[in-house]
Structures are given as C-alpha cells and as structure tokens.
Length: 286
Image (cartoon, rainbow, N blue to C red; front, side, top):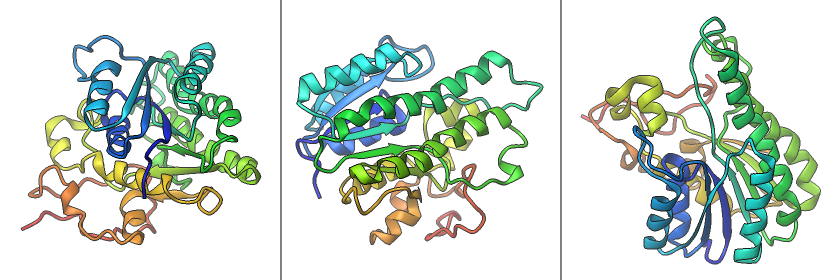
C-alpha cells in the first residue's frame, strides 16, 4: 500500500483528525492540500494551516496550505483549481470540516443551526460536487466523509436535533453520491469512530480533560482512512465504516495503541448502532 505521489484535498486539516490523516499520507510522500479557515493562531485551539503544512513537510509530504471556508463556493472552487494547478491532479477528497453544538431545540440559536448545516451538509456536498470533474481523471479516486452510519434512532436526535440533522446530512451525501458516481469509478464512503476521539472538539464541546483521557487518538481514523484510500475505488464504495471494525477486518488486532489513557474505560461515540460489536474491549487495561 502506498499513497506516494497521490494528491489529497482535506477540509479542516489544520488540526485533529484532518491533520492526522494528512500526516499518515505524508509518510508516503503524498501531496496534501490543507483546506481550512485557520490562518492565524486561535486563542483556544492549537494549529493553523501553516503549522500543519510544516508538520506535513517534516513527515515527508508536500503541503499546500489554503485558506478555505467550505461555506464559500468561490473559495472552494478556487482551492480545487489551485490544487490541480500545483500538483497536476486530484486523487482523494476528505470532507472532515464540521461544526458542532450539542444543544436542544430551545438552546440552539438559528445562526448556529445555519452554521452547522452550511459547514457539515452543504459544505460536504459542495466540495464533493466541485471535486468530481477532477476526480474522474484520477486512477483510483476516493471521496471520504467523516460522518456516521445512517442509524435512524430517536436517541441520536433528541438531545441535539440540529447537530444530528447536519451530521446525518453528510452521510446522506455518501448514500446519494456513491450511487451517482459508481459508474465513474469514484468511491464515496463514510468513516466514523466507535469511541470519542481526543481532539479539540471533544475537549471543548463534551467534557474537557476527563473526556480526552477516555478517548482514542486520531491516529485510529488516520490508519483507517489510509487503508480505505488504498482500496480499489470500484470495489469499496457506498460503505459506512466504523474505524475499529474496519481495521479488524483488515487484520489489525492491537487497538490499545490508540488509547490516550489505558487506565480509563473508553467512551462510546454518538451514532454507533447498537448492533455494531466492538472487536476489542473498551474497558480499562488492568
């Protein structure tokens, strides 16, 4: 398996999961476009598109940091054009950018509702739409959404309806685009973590340091994405993959390597269906 010479366009890649996927590809000397909003340091969040670019280059890849607000069609189209002009093509798109606010209907302001839908559902659709003409020229093209399986249970909606609708909107894009693009040989899949992942979003939106310790590292998603991108695009498409289940099917057995704190029980993530069995225990390591 190798992504050497492949070009990846990753939204929200300045930190967290997007950066982890970028660094895994960079180890193969891939070209990585960091399409994110953070050009200047954030007071609470680490990383900018430029610090991400430095890490990618240090890992062995080529980086192109671009300021991209996925709500802005002109910026998205311009960034994709710049990608192809710089690297000669486009092989992989990762729709990772996402906005989150876990509030009920009465606590959700409409401007936050609009933001989550513009970034999550609309942004995913728009980036994918404008990437397709370039991906049709690739040898093994993939689109990957960081979005959940379509498990339509009340419990996934009742506490945060606005966020859930927006996040499931990304998955509906997988369902539709996989069918639309199958004949073109473009794979469209979703990837979702079984447990919470130690990112800034978890730290600030869900529970601070305690939640971070009971999470897995972003590398489990990076390793999963890497294996997805190396699959033939005509053979793996329209799938809603859970990270550890997919890796287990790929022969991975050591999931403790992804724990932030082995003494803590791992916290299950939202949206994982009840019927999905974990291939390894989530209990603390004694």
